[in-house]
Length: 150
Image 1 (cartoon, one colour):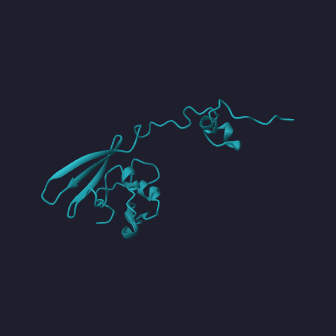
Image 2 (cartoon, helix red, strand yellow; image 1 turned 30 degrees about the vertical axis):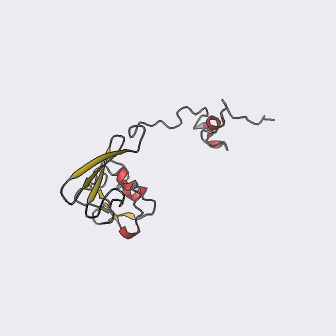
Image 3 (cartoon, helix red, strand yellow; image 1 turned 120 degrees about the vertical axis):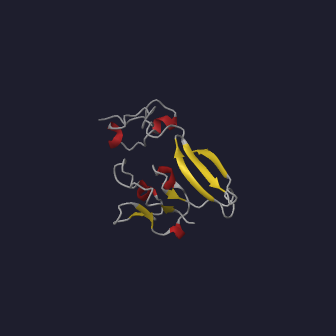
């Protein structure tokens, strides 16, 4: 079964500003906003590349996906759901058995990252500069050289 949004489980990302996050994260623009329900849906499921970006953002586990053949045998179903630092996959086999495994996809809890942490540049003042964010850090210098003013 192709990727789809369960409309009964979807709350249109009610707790998130901007509406359904699956609509914004889909790299192929397949997830769109249903004008009637104001919820996301996959407009062309056969074109979905199964990248699972929408699954990783969905706060209600409303997105159902097809499993890859290397871990989901024929006739089984899989439902990923978000956990603190990754995704937990529940595979339901035809004989009724269930197997769960967790795949870490984060190193820090959601919302805890600090942009520009350990960068030597001033992120606001350097917006007018041609330097790249973090450039001095990656070059291994304390500060980038500047041109002498005349």
